[in-house]
Image (cartoon, rainbow, N blue to C red; front, side, top):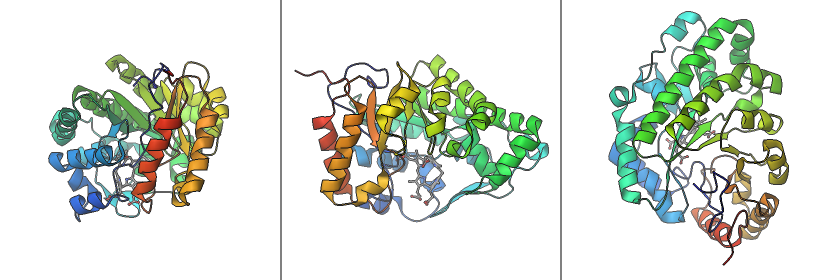
Length: 342
Ligand code: CP3
């Protein structure tokens, strides 16, 4: 929490995106078969899956076990998450009529299990570790809705944004409203910081990002600021967008492995923290390599306050949990950004 606000810290904090998940044997044992959306809808199970990596790794943040498509699923839009593939939409959005099927999200009625899971986690953590709430940014969620599933080219979503501005604005406006409702519910349930995942923003040019993605994301971040909690804005392949992402108003910007953190800090600007940015694939290398690369990240983060160590994207399923445990120890022992030395 302190690092988010560029305040001094006792040690560099660390958590991992997708720290809960398939890399953990205890996750595979507890999760069972079935859709991930069913696991998410079981508050006791979702709370347990959130807590597993906190216990095992000693990370400084718990990220709620949920998914960016949960609000869509909860309003009955017809979305599922296919194992090994990701979100798929039965009737993708092609027109204004499809967009009108997207009704407002009422978290307490549509997805009460999210708040229940968050409250269970917060009670268990007893204030020792903050709970990180999250939502998908309007562009990234729209990309699944319009493409109908994961995409390489984002051709359909780009065609809609360029070809039908009125429909696009209506779509991202509704998705911003859903993200705001979802984040507010998570904060009411005890999340003290939130991350907005604009994972696929890197598919946009700076001009496209500024016109088609930034305004709705800025609206989400402004609503989070009103809730009184700091926010993190994250995307992949966003090197050319970092300044624009910072201008959207988060306290901290998530950086992937393509931009060294000293350069990322320059692009994000003073007064904003950075999060990242070890390449998740490096975690598959021998430990000496992981340690060297992690030390490079820490060196690039420098000594100014405002760094949270993370991977540049999610933990890969084949990662050895022992490597992540050792990484947490290394970051706690050697991180220097804003660290108050005794
Ligand atoms: O530990 C955590 O990070 C918390 C849980 C979390 C999940 N999804 C659980 C999950 C979070 C923060 C997300 C966010 C999410 N979901 C994003 C943004 C983050 C990112 O990776 O860029 C995106 C794009 C999604 C959509 C999504 N859901 C994808 C692309 C996939 C992967 C499909 C696959 O199987 O490879 C999912 C499924 C998913 N969500 C899994 C987990 C742990 C894995 C599948 C499972 O265990 O059933």
